[in-house]
Each structure stands twice: as C-alpha cells, then as structure tokens.
Image (cartoon, rainbow, N blue to C red; front, side, top):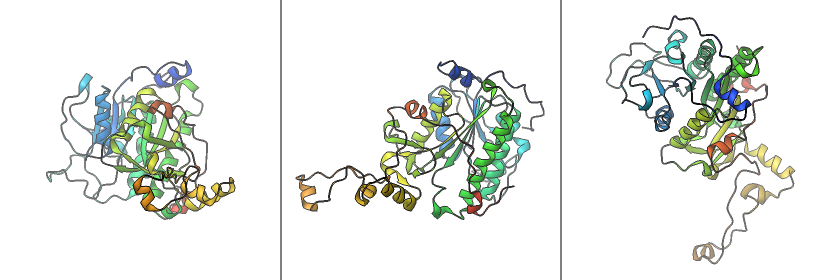
Length: 349
C-alpha cells in the first residue's frame, strides 16, 4: 500500500490505560489493534501474534513482504500490512489507529526476497547493519508512533548488553543507542502534555530466547538495571508482553526477563565485589546463602545427604511473583540516566 498521507489525529485527552491507572481501575479494552512489527519468520513476533490472538486482542501483523494469515477472532487482521522500519515513509499504515505498537525486528541479510524467491513490493536494504534496524529503524518507529498519537510503544530488546564482554559489540551498541533514542523522543513528545495524555514506551529486554514450552510466570524473574540475565522461551516472553499490553502496566519502564534458574550477573566481577562488600562469604556469593558444603558424590547419589539449591545471582534480587501482573506491578519508571554508549564503539548523533 502507498504511504499514508492523512494528517495525524489530534492527541487524545487521555490514554485509556493511563486514565484507568490514575483512577485505580483495571485497564479498559484496547481502542484499536495492536501492531506487531516483525511478526514473521517463527521469531518472537510471531509468538506474540499468537499470544494476542489467544486473548482475543485485535492484531495487526506487520511484515516486509506480503502474506496472508488465517482469519483471527474479533476482527483480527486476515492479511499483512507492509512496512520497512528503515524506510520511515512506509510506517504510516503500520501504526496509524493502533492502540499499541510492538517493535520486534531483526536485521535481514537478504531481505528483498520472500520465501519463494519473489521480490518484495516494498523493497528493503539487501545488507542491513544492526545500526540500520536497532537504532535508525527503531527511532523511525518511535517518531511515527508520536506523529500518529499511538498511546504505547513496546520495544523488544535484549538483556546483557551492559556486560563488559559486549563492549565493542555492534549489535549491543546499536540496541543501546536505539533505546536511548526512544527515551529522548518520548521525553520531548511528552514535554508540556498533561499527565493523562502522555504517550508511553516500554523497553522489554528478553534473555537469550529459546524455543520450547511455557514454564509460566512463577519461574520467571524481572530485573531492572541489566545486572542479571538468563534465558527465557519465546512463548513465555510473548505471554508477558501480552499481559503488559492488556493491563497497561510497565509504562515508561525498562526491564529484563529470564528464568530464575538461569539467572547470572551480567558483570560478574562487579557483582562479586558488591556481594563481598555486603558481608557475605565467597562461598555464599558464588553459590547462594542456602548452598551447603558439597559432600562425597556417592552420598548425594544415594540420597543420604541433601545439597542446598545453588544460587548464582551474587545476592542480586529481581521481581518474582505468581503472575505476570504481580511482577509488572513492581516495575519502576526509568530515570534519566546517561548511558556510556561510547564504550560500544558508536557515537551519539
């Protein structure tokens, strides 16, 4: 479809989620579809579309190449919307009228070809750098959401980029710079707006994404500050984001999500120093407060001796709960923190 030419709608008097939250009420039904940019390829975007459909939430899948989807409940889209995040002029139809937009995109190496070898109608860069997608592309989406007064933008990013071992990583540098751009765009867009009419973003940093079954919220941990990272399945991450959209929770926040039993510090040496400074022993810091001496392995196998649960988090505690909502309730809004982006080999524009 051609780029949208209609003028942006007037800013709403109040977003539904923000108004309900201020009144202490549950979020009302979403007013408009949820646009999922990057909904194909068996990645997190496609899992998110499926999760939203299961909740009977109207979905607008956004692809680079045309394709047809099964009919979805309650008026959900039956065909794709075309857009390319690296081409700002294509984003109007993808975001206009949406109640929320989810950015779940990765660079493509041969992105002009569809699965059957035909060329995309929209055309894309044949060799994209991470900076094209995670920085420029994300900023394009954020600006389009502001232009069309989309109440909420949710960015799917990755955890662990604060790990010193990632210094110089082109992907981490691009993602951190893109996250910072989103915060700047929304800070400027909301300047002077009354609280009830402000647009919002959420940056959801997934741990290492895995295929697999749902383990559910009781086994997941949320962290803020990128001090812990781990693994999480695509279905669980998708369900977390779906609950966040449906509830309106987590606005103006950045967090990491991973399974509790995979949690590890992103900066091991700093976490160890902090743990030892808190008065814990080296053994407690490395294996957890409840971890006992490791006895003879034959005694463990025979069941004569029980070994305590190992905890590798260095005493760093995140948010845990019996439901997604319980954890999302504990998130804190982002502070204006100046990130050391230059450490990742990129410069601010």
